[in-house]
Image (cartoon, rainbow, N blue to C red; front, side, top):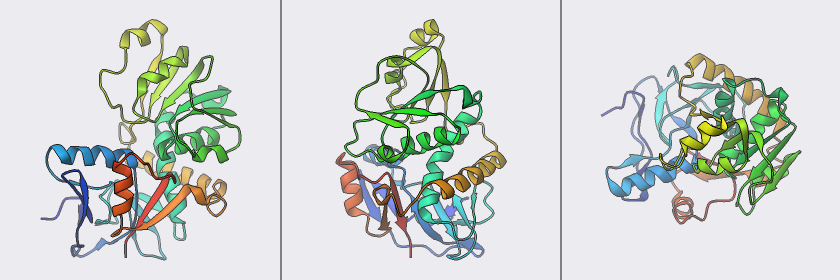
Length: 294
């Protein structure tokens, strides 16, 4: 049966492991997948869910289109075919490098979440918890908005953000308090250690535990909590225009060839070692992982 939005997911999570499946013929007028962008947190949640219940297709961000023409980033599983006119699709100009698309995909999540907040130009500092692709994209968006100094709290042994200017990387929460704190890990209660009274906490990573936020503490300190899910309350037109803006900035700013440690490209039908490392908590070092489809 053809799904309303896609056909032919190429990786299925079954009983806690990744299983590759053969491609299915796409309906007339649909476009084949060129490559997919991996979101490690989403992959881990769906792998865990498959241990307890039904199968789950892997991933939800795949690029479709002709190799040399304009393409679309569509929220469908890894390797799936989709419709070029999907209203949720994000436009990719011809000739755009996959690495820039991968970075912009994560930066967009922060850009949409920060869009509804007051202008960030008044901020001198911000704190970001996390060391994966979501945190990297968040730091880049804060830089695009003009925040001069960003402190990143992560236990990652080789965090990619160390290569960015005016970014301080620490393994423990810094001393003092800050007006803006964004959690990209899902352990959102740790933001309480550093958010200032009257400040704001952004929930960019999916919270792991619904009871982890002590609402009484946030209430007494006058702290605002902002959910930053990329699909929550954002019209398709806004998402598409914001993606264009972020992608243009990334293409000018991020030197893919000068940052080889940021990227890894894997054939989509040979992801066994990648998922084995992911499920063993030995996170792959590069934050941006791209799965190529023939």
